[in-house]
Image 1: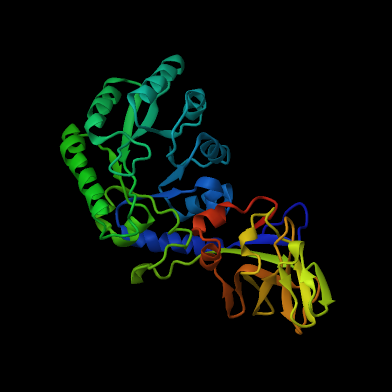
Image 2: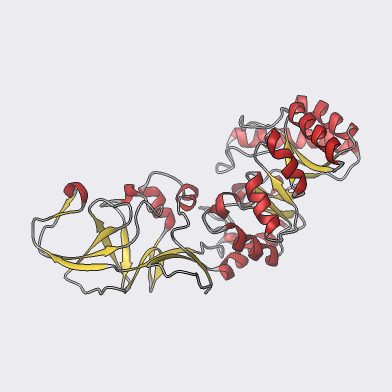
Length: 372
């Protein structure tokens, strides 16, 4: 376990061995396709640099980031693998994108010309991936307009087109007509536009659900983000060894006995039915533990699940342990396993009426991360 400079009574644990095992399982399934690991938003809350270093050791081929800042941090941490910036770029970022040798997404002639102008001033070559909008309606150039864009890129010496990609919008429903339509549009674009160019261009479409359910989307590279972190549901049998590797633990900060009919916490949103024992956990919404879990979720103490009572505060919350015993300094598990019991992050997300991505991305750096 890595040691932090300051002791803190609550922390996140990341099991890097399980993470690497997840990569191995996916690698086995995708065959010869390249593995691009999206590590946006602090590697989905797991910690950008340690996760990138572990993934680099595990043999991923590419990294995907959302923005310049993430890519620059990876380069400064000596990550040398190709890094693709999936998000839109802005004019004032272009010199740094070139400096850090990041591969950038181009989806318009306007952005391409801005990059070309910057390259003229520096003499640098820019590697780009052209994003095709096959139905996401978010970013990307439409297939009919992409031909002009590709012709411009090919005719401009400062560009090297290394990839063409699109995003699946409804891959969680493999039988969805729109999913099939997106795949067909992308395949048609490759057949009619990319292959006749007789150049080696990486074509990539599959996200996590695509990797799980749609092998026809693998093409030359796949981008399984949340799957690699262990949170895709309804996994085919070959992927079931993939597991989450993220836990949150804390030391009990306070213990008291509370009489019958007493309100707990702000607003007294919970009142004791009988005399009971209450412990306080030093984690709150200021750490990213959602206030929506008030009076709804549970934590594990001594391998038993106990309910959160009262409104979760910025820095702490209360747990009702009934007439059982727990002592200050003992471990409570907010997400993860303790003995045979488990609090699943997917269950936390359901209680908050959201998805695991949002919960993971919400945990900030006040909770130190320890890598096992």
